[in-house]
Amino acid sequence: ITKLFTATILVKVLKRHGISLDEEINKYLNVSINNGEKFTFRTLANHTAGLPPDPESIEFDETSENPFVHFKKSNFIHYIKNELIVDEDKKGKWSYSNVGIAILGYALTLIEKKNFREMVDSYVFSVYDMPTSTYNRSSINGDVVSGQNSKGEPISPWSFAEMDAPVGGVLSTVKELSKFVMANFDEREEALKDTRKRTYTGQDYFDVALCWGIIKTKNYHFHGGATRGHGSMLILNQQKKNGVIVLSNISAYHKEIRELRNLGIELLDSL
Image 1: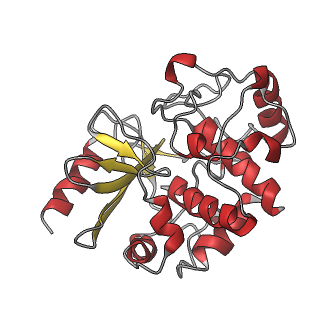
Image 2: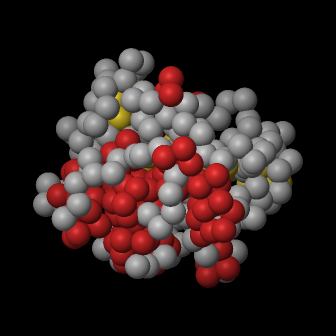
């Protein structure tokens, strides 16, 4: 769900600096991308740049201890400069990529001259009255629901390095996420409205906005999340101004993790 905040920051920052979604992001970066690849803000935000889900050097499974935490700024810059490979067959097609969102977030920090977590605080949490939402686990006195592995056993959560902040790591509550949902129903919130505009028409059951997915048959906007120990789903019915937030301690590696989305849809259908 963190990526919805990244999309919100994207729209606000681009508007503030007079930058178009279709401008190449490369000129705002302080590093050249491997093989001279070029991306726009739009293709990164709607996952159509042909990028891999994650850097190939990061290995994920349920036993991985904090796979992100050692991928610091120097590792990230080395990766996009020397190792990043675009899949030509996926260019122009939806293919979910944490790499793309990380590059997007990095460019926004350079444009704003702020670190990404500061931007989430100033452009999202403080604007939508989310005072306890944070990246900082220690600041909330350990009041975090313990994660579970795929067998239902307690497991420690992944931590996210600064370069992964646009991708994941926000800690929040249903109460505070509800304020973000309600803001999405406010027609005066132009930035949030812009994040929900369809930017890609998919071949399957959903289209894509800026980070949001859009279920075609219902016109619901949604975004889910899944890490070791936790899963989430946020889904909106813009027409009826109803929303559902599901936060769980079901692991990304649980065989039924996709049922969170189905649960969100069923709950929203019933409202």
